[in-house]
Length: 363
Image (tube, rainbow, N blue to C red; front, side, top):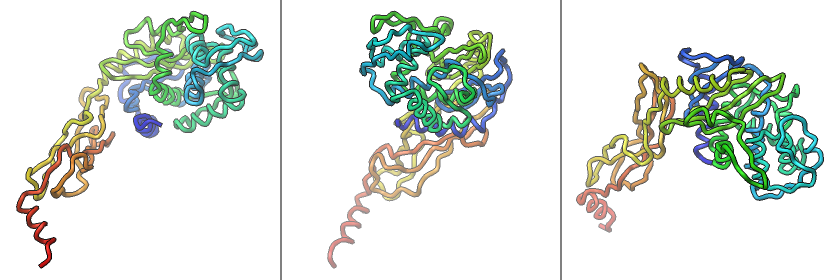
């Protein structure tokens, strides 16, 4: 799993559970909702976010993620009769038809094809039951402890549910997958002899919307999971059982981007400080960040940096040597840290080098 995703998941597992929304300057018509900064995992707004809810076709985010991880986009899938008989929204598959897994994924995410979900599940998981097992294993991996999946398409089932918080965690993980991002951000595509148009109207309604997934059943109501980006900052919004979801997501993003702009505290490879070097030709060495770090900060909040060194540095020092960590705090609470590396090599002073040489000679 990519390092960035592991870091993201670690942040999500902590922050989704402990960082409450600090402002209530926005509201929605949803029974359950959440707005999250995708990179940091900071919750910017929440409303009944831990309620167990039906999630309808937003389920297909998990279906797509598992299929992309476990399958091959170029695989040829032969459609079985069972898939063609699936109720609800459809990409109108025909028994015996052969399509690539990639084509089925477009039908899954753009047309919300329940038939595509079954065809994908049978192919990737060996059966729907086998695929559902993979879905639930992935949910546990992502820390979605309040979720259970019973099918790949989101049709109502007593053992099929999630929460707004869990679905935000899923969306954040999904947006780390470049293939999935490419598919869900597509408005219209012609592939496999079909032209398909995305049901997600937010792509047209709002600048910066990257996509994700709509959903509806009579019992679940309207469900929507979306992601938007402005100035390099990505936010994820989830609304469950919301009759006004298009407008609510736009309002959530307007609130989030304006109230919690992301502040970059560290840039990969750039110096954050300098450290003293004992016995070196140079008295100090730059300490550069081994990774980037950003955090959403509201007016009145203070993001501070504290340098923690592993110990004193003594020449010779090699560039790239880990020297410590930069610790980032928001109002005195730690929100993250990155390793600090020596940004240059520092040879010893000449007299120090000669002394070391002499000490090694026989008497």
